[in-house]
Image 1 (tube, rainbow, N blue to C red):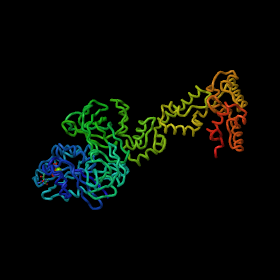
Image 2: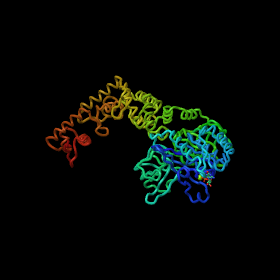
Image 3: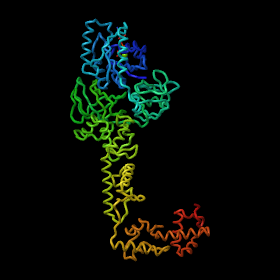
Image 4: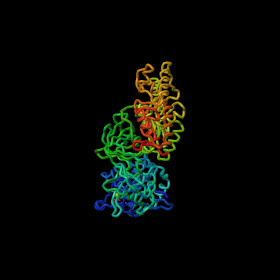
Length: 633
Ligand SMILES: Nc1nc2c(ncn2[C@@H]2O[C@H](COP(=O)(O)OP(=O)(O)OP(=O)(O)O)[C@@H](O)[C@H]2O)c(=O)[nH]1
Ligand SMILES: [Mg+2]
């Protein structure tokens, strides 16, 4: 099954709607006002079923110059253009404007239907054909079929239909790897069903029950039902005109221009960098800060343009620009857009979106120009690397990269994998990536912080992990974890509980420091169950200080001294043997009170109570009234 979308284009009254009706039997002018005035105001839809599973979807657009805005919403998703020119009138202003719009949107091919041939003499027909050739000459329609038709006589209709089908068969299939995106062109309510939106599914696949989000307002919903050509379907694929019944969404919460896509797949933006080309027949140069109408997908948003490398853009020039949008747009890099001047309302140019999360704007900044040139002309791998570079030390989530690159999930996954293989990127995990330079910087910063720390505190075993992380520019938690893990795997860094040190670091003591440390240790070991206070112990060795003294803390960090409570430390071995005594006692006597422990260890209350509390905290014992019993294993 193949679906190809054809959009009509052309000047008002040239016979677009009549031609669609003659081809499909569908009158696409539905509105009473359209009927009354005999003109098309808004988009109309019809389709043709061709042999071999080919469906040609037709979007009929208005030709009136006041409704170009509606025309733009319709041609955003088309594959082929059918430029309709009335033989009796020939090329007219909206013939040119619609052709320019299709060119700007990079529509790949199409044809010209030279209609109302019943109203033109053969000589006249020849002149018009020449005009048409000259018109399309340097456009995507160069060399295209020009099919004379008449709706009145039916002449040429079969030829037209065949020509359309031939073109449609040649249109390459749309990628379904992309995330589903449906730019909404109509919203209405159906009694008993609720809100229904329609649009051309630009990419991916949508299925009934899929969770979706309506952007930019972030309305969460679910696909309650899908229709293609008025028939319910289980799923719709890229290129199909699709009606989506959205669960639990108010009609008023959605409008034309919004986009239905997978939850979290897209990011609304108020800034977008892009290539900007001005049409050769634009009425005047485009100046920095000019206000324009920005059309992308089915959206129209007002915007101001900033030109990156010049004061103004002359007709037929192309450059880079930033759009400051007055309402968020929903688009992906690679999307084409059209700009129209604020007044008069004429199409003046367009371009390709390059970056929807652009860096700070600086005019004439070589860095910004290089960034944009890379996004514009770089290979997919280079573009991805550029985005990772921009993400800096925090790295980027794969989901964010998906929303900011034109690749599609599967291609992005492969690009990330090969980036990691080539060393351009570091995988923090499957969902988080970092540019090599950022990783290298964080790595050397972390190592020099450790060196500096060891130099400043030679007697400390290491720095706390949290402190190190915060000193390393408050590194992103997952990024930092991954760095430490890989440094440890290399043996460059060692971690002990939450202490981090260089693998090469060891504490070296002077003979005097050695004397104090071993003196302290001996003192505590010998005092066993009745240890001195830290001040006392240090004092006996001729050193002034408290438990905060670095040599005292060295023994604590080394777990040779154990803190039982503030200023009360026991030698680890002493504490171990107290525990053994206590456990043996409890096994026999079942319980012990404060007096019991005083007797058992031969110590005063000052030690007995903290010890009992300590063993409770260690989950050796448990309190029962005034007594302790062994905690059940
Ligand atoms: N004689 C003749 N009249 C035609 C032919 N095709 C269309 N018309 C007439 O031309 C008028 C305009 O036709 P439409 O099909 O509404 O033109 P349109 O291009 O859709 O107009 P807009 O949508 O408003 O831009 C109608 O009165 C049609 O009957 C044709 O082949 N021969
Ligand atoms: Mg019409």
